[in-house]
Image (cartoon, rainbow, N blue to C red; front, side, top):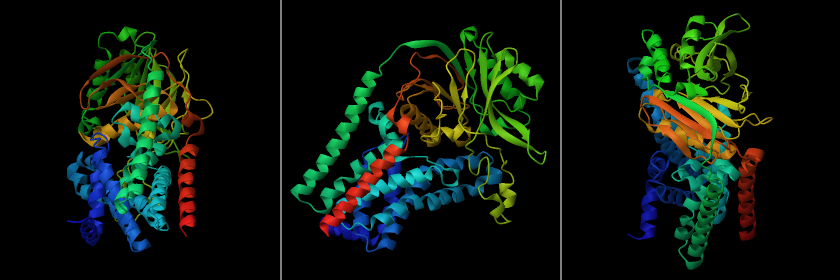
Length: 512
């Protein structure tokens, strides 16, 4: 079969092909990391867009590619509905289809706009830039959900993601598309010049990225440790038992028992995960004194919990919070989650929903949001920031920009999603933030993956998914380092995107 025959066959079933290509692209994401598949999928997508007959066709191709990519890439979200399968299990296929249907728009728009450029080189440059711009927009629309950024597909080796310290994960996403779509330049018009151009682009991008990564890792190769020792507690309590009224007391005592394992006297911070305490420890004096059993004499407990504050109508509203508690039971510091999970901790546009949906949405608590990233200074320890659950997935939104902390603590609970891709992808997002900001991050997860990640994004210690245990480790001596991205944030990748668009316009004008 000749290339023209293959192209004709694909065009005949182009929407189906786009869905398949999008779904196959998920294989490059964590934890699979089959990165070479993107050379097939994004090159094929670019060729499909180049042969599109109009804006409507280009939009449809991009949409169906995105439908396959996001529906399959976010399929693990539906596992949360299976925790109470008898009540919410029927929503699983709806969640699957809704993920693809909504997020597919974020690849449809780049495909639609890039149709303006008829030349394949201009389309290549513009599509890559527009995809990344839409990734960035996805980080704040309806409070944002920048999950599965394409840059995370490079996290199969530490050297491939060090450029995030300069360009951020969005910059790596731009690199990924330009690298993996480049073969289409040679395939579309098969001649020596196009082949050399494609190979040159791929070689330059790969060598520059991996070369910088290798150099940076050698530069930050530091095996010295500080005197700060943390104990991360991972009880692996199944989500079906976490909020069972008959299990609440047993759950918190499991945290206490694990915390009391030998060596506690040498620990500075005992760290529990998100909502580890089901009891509001600011009001509940009994359980606040109980948890002091898990605290060393001169140490502190850092724990997640749900607490309650009265609103303007004197009704108590829940907050997803963190407390720092000393051996005397005194609360030395606190943080309230500010980036709430849509459809998990609040319902976007709740008042506008149809009446038939409200019995379902009313089962979801309307949490109160905190004030954003804050630093905590506990005694003479280096100041740290706290992020709860998915707050860690937002590039450029994880630290107090007026006073950068020296390390971060991420409390989370991925127990909703079972043994799926979700917890692995969440860990990789944490690694990306460590590189971008140049900060050590301690991650405490109820069911895992708990980990300590150094300023170069390397996991120095971890506990496997769904394994009960403790993780005792000293923090690196050098907790933080200044990074270019940490200083200028998303200005850097956006400038790169607009540079791509400018080149695309120049090519269009020259060819005209």
